[in-house]
Amino acid sequence: MTISLEEFQNWLEQHGARLQAWPEDRLQAGEALLEQDPKAVAHLEQAQALGSWLDESPSVVVSAQLRRRVAEIPIQQARDVAGLSGSWSSWLRASLAAVFIGMAGLMTGAWTAPSVPAADNTELDVELYWDEFSELALAGEFDTGGER
Image 1 (tube, helix red, strand yellow):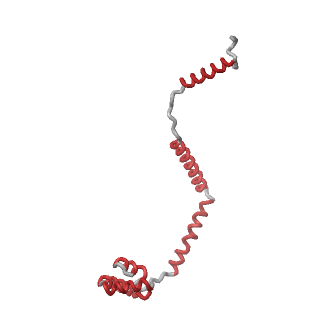
Image 2 (tube, one colour):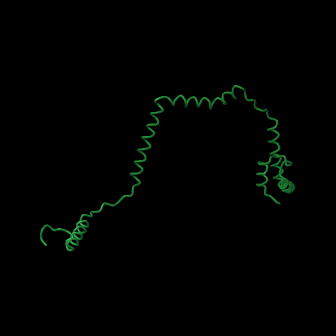
Image 3 (spheres, rainbow, N blue to C red):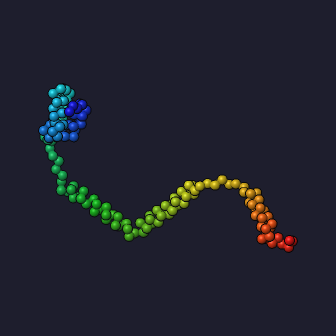
């Protein structure tokens, strides 16, 4: 298996500079590239230097006070929310939200309703009326008011 220098760099980032920790197939491909490409050696040395620098850096000790303050954040937020639930301000907010949602729904419905072009169908309606009236009158099913 042959790999490119870019793949080797990605594997260095994924698995670290200790080649013995790499999966077997990648280890063999990485060692083969190290024998052929001096740039790969430079990248490995840089990764090893960074790793040793991180290993030598002092570890950060978090104070008990900071841990306690971070652990209390969700508790404090729950208290803040619980404090508002019984007050009138939360009901006012909920009412305003409901009104806003209702108005948004009405406006959306008005804007998205299919528009029907206004047409003057008066003439058509009169023709249909007289056609229907004439058929009923000729069939004798409609009383015309006296004349037969």
